[in-house]
Image 1 (tube, rainbow, N blue to C red):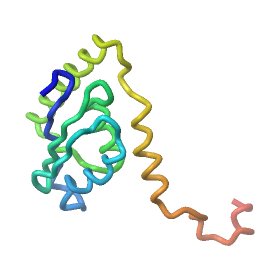
Image 2 (image 1 turned 45 degrees about the horizontal axis):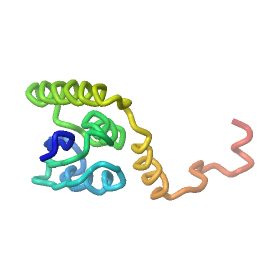
Image 3 (image 1 turned 120 degrees about the horizontal axis):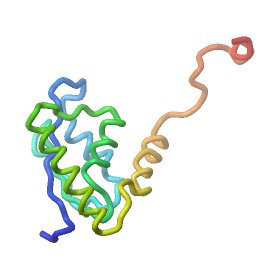
Length: 131
């Protein structure tokens, strides 16, 4: 494996309405650039390989949290996560790269485009102006 390629495991919490968070996360993360391989090993474990030049683990996990996924926050995973974040941030800084690339906005744009749009307010149009 190249020194700029990373292979990580992302663990999800069992306490979530979606029983198969790993597979759902694969669907959402397909739009991100820099991710080479994503495999749902189990319902709560996702194997991911990515290029650190384009994206980092912290950004990936922040996207997942913002999309509503629940990561496993047991002590061992918090320690591992903090170590990975620090080493990747240091490696990216040594390469002269910013911490949050703009390419991650694609996943939010794609998620927005999938939604059904239109008026979300159930009141009549003339009642909306009074409140």
